[in-house]
Length: 627
Image (cartoon, rainbow, N blue to C red; front, side):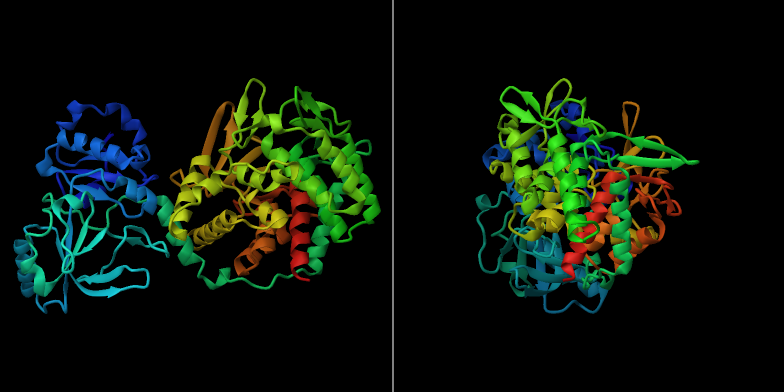
């Protein structure tokens, strides 16, 4: 793909008249828009400042095939002006796929005992090294200390540090340049180095004897760093540094009288919104001038939140257990089941007043939430039979395809694989006999180091879309964290704190109903857009993305604040909880859905079932942790 709209700063960083870049998977360059322009005729017209950019995601997995493609492209470009640069922030396994792609572009580091004291002495020594090695791609360094991870640590005259070794991300997330060849010990043959970023390390006293043993470079040097940013790697390093902040250090969880009062208030919503005939609850309640405006349609996600909130109320002794158990049994008995050939499943949407079906279809994510609730209810002796009877009605094997539970929409079947709920499903569905389920998180979480695995996981998170607090932290509360969940929680928390440090804005992002059009918004961490924290909502048929910091629909989610403190108690998440406790309480009504980020004003007299159910879950989890 040809991309010739590189900003001036990035063009200057490339130095050469023409360059080939091996871009990270999510470089902030729009390569797709240029794909149709890729023609052999265009290659011959490469001029000053033009970049031939290769999206590594499109490279053949077979190295031999990648090499063939690379040679064909190289043959179309003036080889004398062609250089190669492979960003070392790529996860290592992807890096290896790229090694055969470009002609050799070697760099040489010459280790000195100490730098000459004068600029004249330094420049003279640099000219000698370039002459003896027959290349301008020489950097004079000192150090050469070998680290525990096997990499060499060297330092330039300007104080810039380089780590040399096996290329990719080190265990701590810092990039390592390579592959390294210790030219004093082993001199590779010319045919052994088909790598665009080979690094040769020489001792100063032996440079003159080695010039014939190394492949010649292509004549253009590309120096670290460039102006092209990989946002996944940038986020990894930011989160790692931010998590060291004392305000994020784990603290002993606290459950006090004020939190018990919050639990009682949240439970009051579940009681006041109850429908006697079904045990279900109104999903949104709003009062204006003494008049009530209620939503009587409920998804299976909200049914799950209701059951889990009621179970939390039993645990915190907010009402007699037998009364709550009777209500949960009534809810389970009221839920309709759609018979569809060999499959049987709950519908997408029902009416809370009589459990009639409002919208046929099947939502895999909502079903996972309901399944989690029913399996937890089954652990209570009084609910075991009712839970077993309900789950016995569901037959979802026919909805599984290749380890993925499908959604049923009005006109088509849709895979639920590429969603943030898919991993949560893999934790829940084994309770229904579906143990061979696929998770995009689990499949992406691969690599030689934690840093590799994390960056791969972040690429997948970006591909899926905005990452909210749920179901990420619900996995913590209901099932215990998986390795993938724990890593994403760390990155998410670090990114929220980084945003606070940069802007002073306290975030608690999640999807939530709001008290004005567009009525419902999705918000959270967003790797794939210009800004990291975004709000998404529908405007007619259009899906709008706006920075959370400036959008009029940016919301501080009440349930997110309680979840974060319950899962990761520290000074920062306590600050989030304090904000919710101070501004989100609606006495005698329930916990408000959230606060508008602009001034943290409450959505007055506006509360919803999902928020209050999850607040109860979070508080029960917190109380359990303090025992």
